[in-house]
Image 1 (cartoon, rainbow, N blue to C red):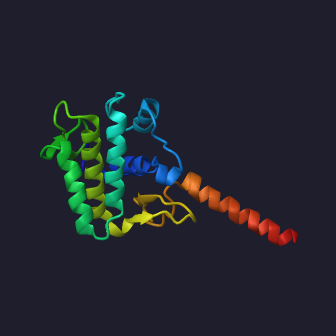
Image 2 (cartoon, rainbow, N blue to C red; image 1 turned 60 degrees about the vertical axis):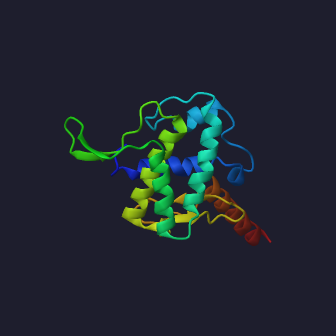
Image 3 (cartoon, rainbow, N blue to C red; image 1 turned 180 degrees about the vertical axis):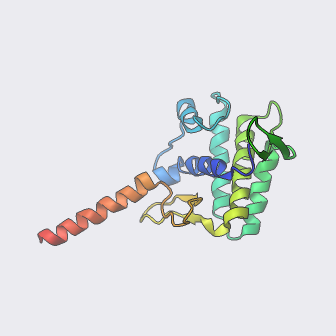
Amino acid sequence: MPIGAYAAGIELANELVSTSPTVRGAEALPDLGALSGLLAGHGLRAPVHEDVFQVQLLRREVRGIMETETAEQAVAGAGVLLGRAGLAPVLRREPGRPWQWFVPTVKGAPLADELAAFVGAGLLGAVRALGHERFRPCAAPGCRGVFADVSRSGRRRYCMPELCGNRLNVANHRARRRETTS
C-alpha cells in the first residue's frame, strides 16, 4: 500500500467500522459475500470463509483506535495494526509515476493481518497529515458510529453520510413541513 495514499486505508477503516452491529443495529458483515463486497475495489486479495470472523475482530480494534483520546494512543494502536503483517516500508516507483513509500506485507499472512497493516498505515497517515481531531463520533442523533474525516474541508459530520446524514435531513424536512402545515 502506498503510504502517502493513507485515504484508501481510512476509507476501508470507515467502511469496516460502519459494518458493526453497534452502528447498524445488526451485523452487516455476517458472511463471505458481505466481506467480499466490503473489500471489492480496494485491490486486496479475495477473502475465504475463515476470514470473516477475524475481520470482525479487527473491526473492534479499528474502532478502538478511532475512539482514542489522544494522538499518542491512536499512533500506538495503529502501529500495532501495522506490525501484524507489515514489513519495513520501501521506496518504489510504478512505471511513469513518482517514487512512493509502500508497506509490503508478510507473504502468506492472514487476510485480517494484511487488512490491519493497510488500515494501520491509513490511520497513521491521517494522524500525521490531518491530526487526531479528525477521528470523530457520528453527529446523527442515536448513531454510535465513529469515523476518520479525511475530507479536504474537515467538516464531515456523519459516519455514513448517505445513511446518517440523509436520515437526519429527511427528519428535518418532515419537521419543517409539519410546522408549515400546522
